[in-house]
Length: 368
Image (cartoon, rainbow, N blue to C red; front, side):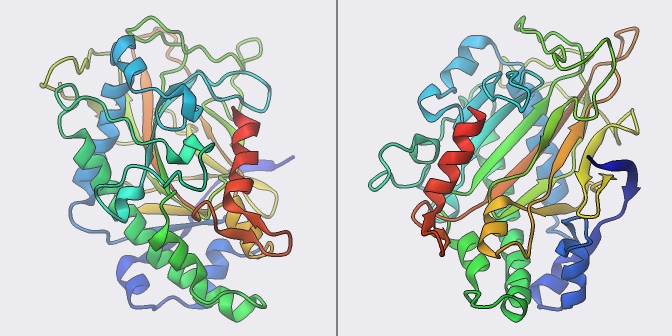
């Protein structure tokens, strides 16, 4: 049980300080240590970041509004809906299927080689969640989508590698038998890093393709804290997050031709209580605001195992805005998460000999 919610300001570093290794250990402890929020912001990003962010996050609304036949064509049941489009397939902690958000999953093996669209299946023939190739929407329907997503994922992984290098320096000094440069190597060489472009549907809304997105987890009209995304931890090493883009979906934005209509966006959530919350290591629930020109990085379960608990996974959730009583404003939330994680054969728990494939399979089985 977590305490009262508060707004807090995470530790912020410049990309320059990370690239020049000018990060004191105390700063990393403030970001990821026992009394921290478990999140780090990186500012002064490359000049194309803001434009890329808005472009990619806008695509999430166009994507979610595509006709059912097109969405079906970019859906992969064989990969347990963890490649391509996914909606209403993930099971939450209360047993309900998650209809509140749609996801588009991308394998980021192209970071190693632009021709790669998945991790190799040779040694893992029964793990299509990572070895099935990406399914991209038709260029004629979402022009520029593939290149923009690949570009922003590459930028986020490049930045994650610098955060990882700082974490490695700290871990080498504080964790016995830590493998020097381990996390940076994982981030730079992984074929299993996965991106998730998220579209949180407006509360109590019905999409143009007829499917309902009512919150099944409301009790007598009361909004739960984690109404948009239930409390969870990420299962990778470092998760890179963009700030959310809030869209007014009261107006049509169908992407049924090569012309993508402009979206009406809000500078921030119209409901100040909506957004990302972290269940901090000190027992408090804290609202975290990520500036539009920054990236955020959180620690995941695999890193917790690798560092023997020194860096702990961060429980977090997303609270949706209150539904407009008049139905005149329909607020959606779009964001992008990139989960950097070890290759499938990589041992993450040396004492038990557990590979990342074994670790990840247990996580996938819990949620699908």
